[in-house]
Amino acid sequence: MIGSLRGKVLDRHDLEVLVEVAGVGYRVQTTPRTISSLHDVGEEVFLWVHHHLREDAQTLYGFATRDERNAFETLIGTHGVGPALGLAILSVHTPAALRLALATDDVGALCLVPGVGKKTAARLLVELKSRLELGEVDLTAAVTPSGVASAPSAQADVREALVGLGYAAEEIAAALRELPEHGDPSELLRLALQGLAAA
Image 1 (cartoon, rainbow, N blue to C red):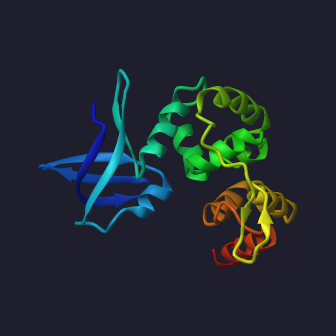
Image 2 (cartoon, rainbow, N blue to C red):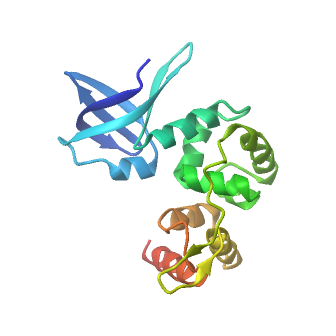
């Protein structure tokens, strides 16, 4: 089983990267966050890899951090979650944001994932709570540089505001990916709206 790859980036296309290791090119599927963190073509890269075996295919899924790979493996070990949905979830949420959503029963956060409705989100919430390590979640309020305390649901507040303004789930998910996980909700909403206007 392949657990990691270190080599040169030969090509990047959509969410696939081709990494050459000792003369062999490995095609690796990844998330938008991971692919944006990779170096330019010709540069060396290191990826944590999940080697997925099926009767008809072998696929490599690559991640920038071990935590992201572990979260992916937990996700695909959950009933009804295959690699495509696992990648989709991690394309919308970092592992820390996913743990926070589970710890705070934030069904709406899981509904941001394309193809996940409220019913599926509620089921995933129950199943993932028992599988994903929630002990690492920091539920204390974060303090912004201005000294304003922000609740862990700052992104949830921004999400609800964007829904109210009529933005689609895909647009909201893309905007939230660019925001810090904590901060003053009004400031985060301003940043999200700027990002959406520029898109």
